[in-house]
Image (cartoon, rainbow, N blue to C red):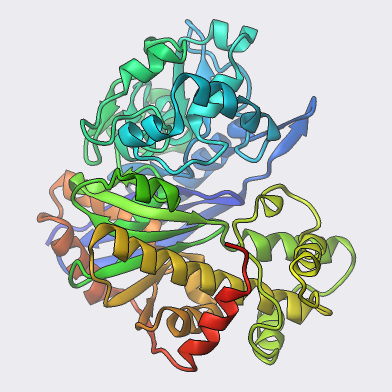
Length: 488
């Protein structure tokens, strides 16, 4: 039986890792071979990604993958969405990509909406309004020497794949997060691009998950010690697209929470939902693997907890996560709740202080301890998941019988239980490494190691991956009352 050893490069907002996946007809396992930090850098008043540092981490990870596996049969890359690098006519990078948390992007929102009203933008792109969507990022660069010199815009995973192979393209699932892709035709929205005064040439040919992008260049082979040829395959390069492939669902009547720095909460559909009610509710239609639509809502996610930990560490306070969670479990429920999507929580900074200020504003007693702050965050996230799951089901007409919670949040048993209690359906937690698993599954199918559609890929997940089940408990009325305390 053929077993493929595949390198799954999975880049998150705070760290990157390279995993070796060994995949066969009845085998799917992962070994983490390299992890590296992903630290934003502020210079000249602008928050950037250190994309060259990320690329160095990818090369180190591929070298480690070769040592672990002996031979690497393929590479796939997934990462966060919207951020991009600009290349000049010679293919040189015109500066580090700007971080989506940089405040400049929001300044372009009124100018974009003056040309393409938000209702029209949604009817075509299906994208939830977020002030850092690529369309706003590019509009904020208009009139700059950098954009004038740019000939190609590459989203982060496409940029790294370009450096590995020399190929230029835009993978579809990540392209669908730009606001410049037509969600129905699944092609670049050229009319929008023209009306916004952007150059169509910036946007490279689209690639579908499973397409072969190219092979590692001789330079990369020499740098990593790998033996060629090593194909690089387009996977669901938006990490959530890969994570949804990694959901071990047994039917289509499921919702998912891909829970990391951000939480992406939604259902999997065959067609986008482009109604005005959907736009008003803040839902997005991002494209998935095998022609699916990830109909979801972005929720701020574990960013609130991560930033709180960072703040406490900077002040010399204990911030061990298991201890914080154990203490939070002893705090009475709903001592205070906030809307995790309050824009005041988006930038880096003192998160506990901002949470306390919002609680005071809404007439609640602010958290008085680290444990109370953590409980406030987790209760608030569970409430946000509840709202998103129920609204997704209502707007799409898709019944939800179970919630699959995947990603790093699947390790947080308190959050998983609270989510089950809030949503009133079982929560199946895991796999933690859903994005890397989904990345590897698409690679393996493209290589011929596996066949079938998403049901067959997910059957392999169910046969090989551990999942924890959390059943609803407690009073539904208590969750209703807690939600009523939040501003509408």
